[in-house]
Every structure is written in C-alpha cells, then in structure tokens.
Image (cartoon, rainbow, N blue to C red):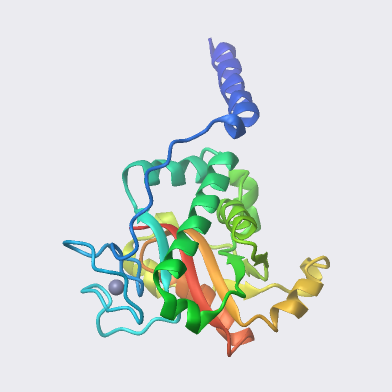
Length: 249
Ligand SMILES: [Zn+2]
C-alpha cells in the first residue's frame, strides 16, 4: 500500500513537472488604473478615482513616506490572483508565472499611458529587478517565482533585467506575523563577486541605472519592498524606484 502511494506521488510529481508549463491559466481582468492607490498599492474604496499624477494618498498611506515613486499592481490578493500566485510559488507553474509577468507588463504600460505627467517625469528607461530569494529556499521550492515573473515582465516591456540583489537565509516571511515582518530587516544584499562571477558586468552597469522597478508577487506590509528599495538606494543614490507587483494584500 505504501509503495503504491509512493508511485502515485511520483506520478503526480512527474505530471506537474512535464505538463505544468503547458497549462493555460485563465487570469482575471487586471484592475483599472485608479482603482488602487499608486503610492501604496492598496485598493481604493468606493468608486474608482480618475487616474491622477502626482497620486493622492489613500487612507492606508496618508502621512507616511515611501521609498518608491509608484506601485503598479494587477489586483487585490484573493480569488484567482491568489490561486495564480500560489500556483507559481508552491506549484512551480512557470507558464503561469510568465503569464503574470506578461500581464504585469501590460498593466505597467497602461498606467504610463493613462498618466502623461508620470510618463513625462520618468521617461522610458527602466531596469527590472526581482525580489531575490535565498538560494536554499530556491532549491527547496524548485522555483524562484519572483524571478520567473520579473523575467517575463522585463521581456514583455523591453526592459533590462538585473539580478543585482541576493537575500540572506532566514525565517520564511510566510511564517511571520505582520509586526515581525515590518521589524525584521537586513536580509537584502547587493550581490558580491565571490558568488557571482557572471553578474560582474551587470553590477558595473547597475551602478549607472537611473530607474529601477522592483518586481514581486505579493505586497503585504511593504517591508520586503522597502528593504529592497533601501539596498538599491544605497548603491544608486540618485535612482528612481518603482514597484510592479501581481497583487496587494
Ligand atoms: Zn495608499
């Protein structure tokens, strides 16, 4: 009985590895520009406001400063967006991750098309940087979800992708409560030459980047985005930083 179960498990694993990339997931329609706060990514209550730049603060972010210029998102965390994020993160569904990246690129362009003053302020030269994952977790999960999404995002929006950051191993973010997420810090690093010979040229070029867009799957407290933004700011002090996320919790 035990061996049958093991074979079934193996079969399921093989099926996932072989066919997951061929499945097409039906993603929901992305949020209209104006239905989320461009400062923090939270859903704007009530009727969608007309897109406006500079952005108004919402109730969630009023009175607080942000290290990024804008947050672009596809939708609120829940329903099909949640399923899609989990399919990439825990189901290793690369195709779904690529779809999310492509949709995020469309949404990014939609935001700039809707806001001429933002377009004028920022220009078009952006560099995508995925939120890094500790290597041990990458091995454990079999996928670096943010990188898969960021790669597709960068390709679809003709941006350069730069993996200039690494993350120190630590307690998995998903196992921490909200306050622990906000107070923890110091996990993100500018990648060091000893571990990344191929990234050397990237790092040199990275120092000249003027506009970063951090790509991630979910923004919960914003603590991870903040940490990433701080490291980018430390190495490229004059760069503008934005965030493109699949969903905001
Ligand atoms: Zn806000």
